[in-house]
Image (cartoon, rainbow, N blue to C red; front, side, top):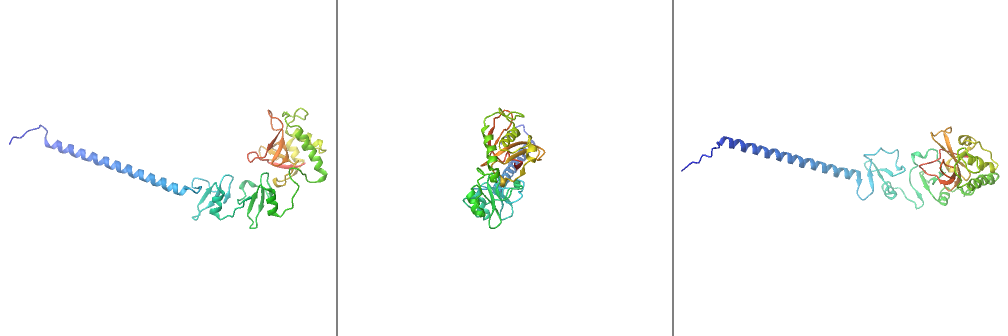
Length: 289
């Protein structure tokens, strides 16, 4: 038998084979570690999905949110606790009521008084009517007839058409009518009319026509009124806005018309106009001349 010498000693072949085997083992370990990491990540996603979003229910978790002060409506969503005592929220009133066992009404809403409600009491707050039900829970409705039915209150004179006393009713209506007659005239800094007005100039001139003397500057005008709450607002009352939240800081005034609207001389570059009360620009103070 002939033996062929390849010129390659056996020892280097063994070392090469050993290195190749080691490299394959290392690659297998890396691949296995990658699969484990991907599996853990997927498990985390599934767990998060289970805890944070209740599929098909419109319910969200509060794990990434600041815990609310109380259950109920916070201005953007309904908060409640689940059976484990964890905070959850939903944008759907029906889901909130189902989770909390709160009875619903076609005309009023079963939500908590917002933390920003401050001094608002039973009655009209400028946008809805607030009242307590037989269990002492706050409810609201946008319908005056429902409010009167639930509270047993006698129908009061409409905020759109009435003033407090018959003695001042015609005076206030005269002031309101004068202000409305100025619609479309330009805002004029320090303007007292007749070609233009600023906010307090319009108010002063309007009430002067009704026989009511008011100071010239907005914060002085507030000092000359009787403070009222949002639930007491009626046509002819004055709305005041303060930049720093203090009476001394009042810088704007307007005349309330009822129906959540007011007439104002707003700012330079605008005309005298009718505007609506909104949560984004809510009066700081309210007063009755």
